[in-house]
Length: 408
Image (cartoon, rainbow, N blue to C red; front, side, top):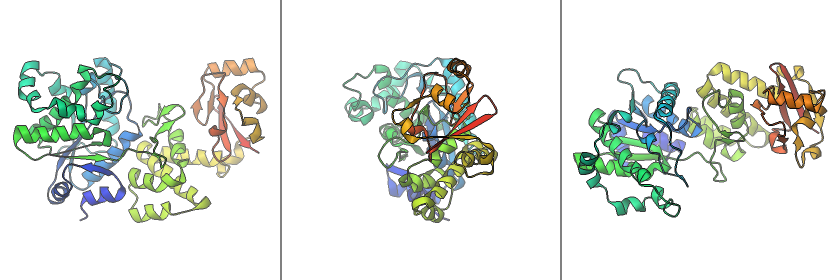
């Protein structure tokens, strides 16, 4: 059987490891308990979390045991990694609610049945710590000089780093130690921005328990230009269908840059790598078929087959290819009219969707207009050329009226 380490490496997940040869050997000879932690700072996971869930699923399918750690305790402090300012302080009630949302979403990708996986919350041990005993047992193993040299702290020194946030690394390191003691967890996984926290946790286990522990980080999901992937006009690309609709989710992947198709197929689907490479090598108009497969596969994993099929059919209608397309009326407008943007109300009037601007304004304010499945709440919203995909966009009026705008 192929070593799962080689699978992750071939697919492009692995960025850094504490001990590459030892980790590969460990994953090849025994069932390893590993963990990834998520601080519940929102009520939904986003696509960056999804990449790590796919990696965890690869490991679980290979016989290893995942621990999904909800950061109910660490979210009370806030991770300074990758931040230019301090995170917003959440209430305990919000943190608990968000944590429950995370658990439900993660259960769609990982098996947490008896013996297969573990759901844990670091609030169970962090919230009950007593300060002086914790300093004596754990704090003495940390060098302040070494901590300040870590990238997550170094980048914050100019703008200021609170003592509250300075404790975050020690808390996350203690999580690893606690999971080692409770479940025999030997391996911590995370995004590459967690590298400093991960290596300190592995070092703490060695110092306190005299045992071997390891860390591995995954590549962050970025475009070929180096920008963070998963950002839309309305914000993050969420896994919750109430925050990002399945259609909008599908469209995001359908419209990725040609250069990113192979990477996304490798990281975000379970398609065999031979097929991934074949699809990634397509050129010209044929690459669009690869994008459709990518969009369907990722949407199916997140939202289920039925929603993926609905999104696919809606997209085909939008691009004038599907059976639905003939039923969707359209208006052709010169591309030049959008060179400096067009007011939404003007566009609605051109398409014959409103009898007057005042009626259009009322409709928008009541939530009755959506563009590309994204509800518009500002009557002064400007439609840009960037809103068009393959020369078209879809307007939805109320619950049943669809109207396509095509560029001429």
